Image 1: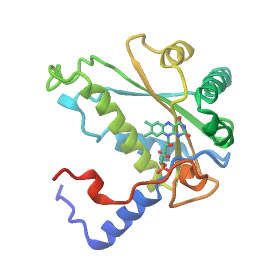
Image 2 (image 1 turned 45 degrees about the horizontal axis):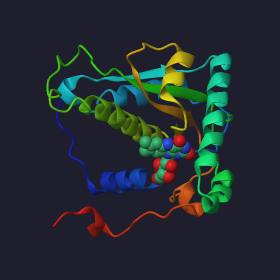
Image 3 (image 1 turned 180 degrees about the horizontal axis):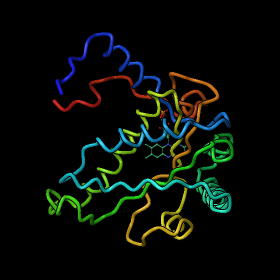
Image 4 (image 1 turned 90 degrees about the horizontal axis):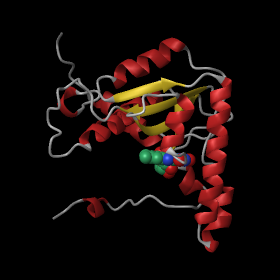
Length: 212
Ligand SMILES: Cc1cc2nc3c(=O)[nH]c(=O)nc-3n(C[C@H](O)[C@H](O)[C@H](O)COP(=O)(O)O)c2cc1C
């Protein structure tokens, strides 16, 4: 196959993809076609990984009883997080919607196999955490692939990793990384919801991220 030459039109579209990718918490209920979900997952497999270990494990959560258990786990952890907020932040925190668990038609839990046979350990002797970093990169790839199909994704991390493994009956050694709500967004925005709700603002000064 000949390598593609990316042109200016593609770059502009890619810019839009990056700028319009959002963490989505308000979903339409109609499902994403399985062929689209499959394509998103296939693209995710092209994510770089330490030693080509591909340690990410995407687990579909379709069973209503399991979904109900995850929702109740989220409610408990979210209530604890609310209590942990400072007095000045707690009212603002209570107003935030931090998951689209009720509406999203698809739920996907992402785990990381911390010691995958694939890759034969290459590259991770001094930094074993690179296995988890690889899984996080896969989630980002999946997020961008979703956006390219106009599909929204909401990352939920207000969950206890050990409870999640028990709830979903996954291999005990797998590390829980993320719970993803997936579906068509109700609205599109070029600004994060946390910014729109006045919780936090994005830094825009580029030099903040550059060491000189
Ligand atoms: C590691 C990670 C964990 C996150 N966990 C949550 C979460 O538990 N609940 C939530 O509402 N958003 C969560 N988010 C989404 C962030 O709040 C969101 O990415 C950030 O506000 C920027 O908004 P944007 O993704 O729309 O640009 C998480 C994002 C990342 C990368």
